[in-house]
Image (cartoon, rainbow over all chains, first blue to last red; front, side):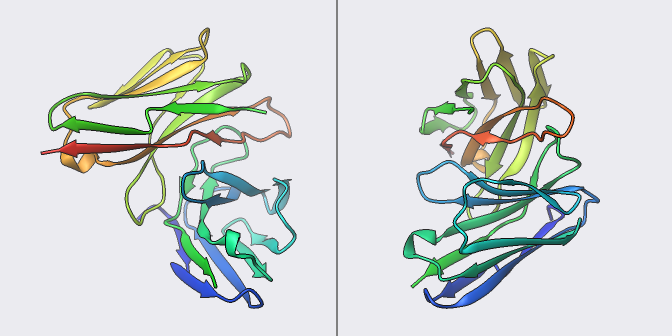
Length: 113
Length: 116
């Protein structure tokens, strides 16, 4: 149990569907992150939220839309995705926005048909 | 921006041997260096980290060394066990303080296999 819970664990969707990924952290942290992990590529940072404010959008296409309603919850809304978006999406949290250890969830395995 | 190179990409050892994974970074402003272990079907788990004001840190069978001059850091696992088999990632983060944040840049990963 890492203290960071991601749902669903697996998701298969068509290119025209709309779905959302959910992340919840029980660690009392103030910063949350979305990462994309593709085969044979380093983890790619997508978004960073600190105290519910987005502080980084790492050139992510608009078909990915994050939402952070409070410091414990983070969502990634998906629409009109492409086959190359199939990957493992990881959520992480840290104590604060500084160089603190980031704690990861087990990810959502996303497959785009 | 920061660039982190990690070697080797795969490493195979016998149980009881030591394993060493090396990373180099490009941004001299990086001051935080964590290592993560990722098992199949799981997210990355932090196993050890080091900050730039320290040259070495040890936690039981795991140690990390940092050479700021050469801009490289290494993970050392002694007395390896089959349960150490996993993918290991290094990362580096610069942090200037204030309103900035510590963006982690990850290496490409090392697949470690420990044979019984």
